[in-house]
Image (cartoon, rainbow, N blue to C red; front, side):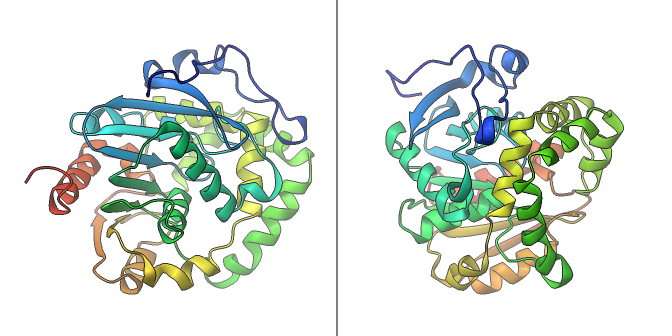
Length: 312
């Protein structure tokens, strides 16, 4: 973390519609890579940011419903060769919820761009998981990011097809508008088996530590409200049209067993972006980087060498 940035606080915050937020001195006491954490004010939000390692800067952006815990094992591996920066997105984890349209794709992209200016960093490599890849793609297209390498991990870069595409956004919007829905989700998530089935539906198998961390998040009213709000304001139609203008070297990594974003979407996205490459990880699901962090770290390092970011 750059010198002079604010230190971590001791209290939780209040999210959209007064929902209670995770507290750093309570839920954050055993947070992965806690020693790398800071809290930074930018774009009218208090962000949870982690920084570790040294070398070219790599930015890690998680997907909907996750947080920096998603990089708990991958970040230290990358820190051997990179300066790693990971953030909790607005409304997720320990970062404030801005509410309403700022949880949209353009809104998230603009807010994250302001944070990077505040941090004074220009990432050479960006890595986005699921919806995080869409945010990074939007930033690259809007010229608020200019990395040499863009790695999409099971990236949600294309609109959902078929019935799911017609139902998902209106349904998410309806759920997000009902203040009782986050309470229902957090009540159901009190059952560890519910969390196990939720994670299992992504095609991934996590250890007890990974399941416990997701359980912590989905039992929090503020985090669930932030995830629902993000889904309710999500639209990938414009991003799909703009993908051919994407300029960084693009590596699309897909888990063979991904139950959230079909691996075929990575192939479709690769066809749209000149020079893009696709790698399918056998036997892994949507959370492949949590299942086999070393495999994903090696892929990123190899692609960074190919892109001239790391020495050959």
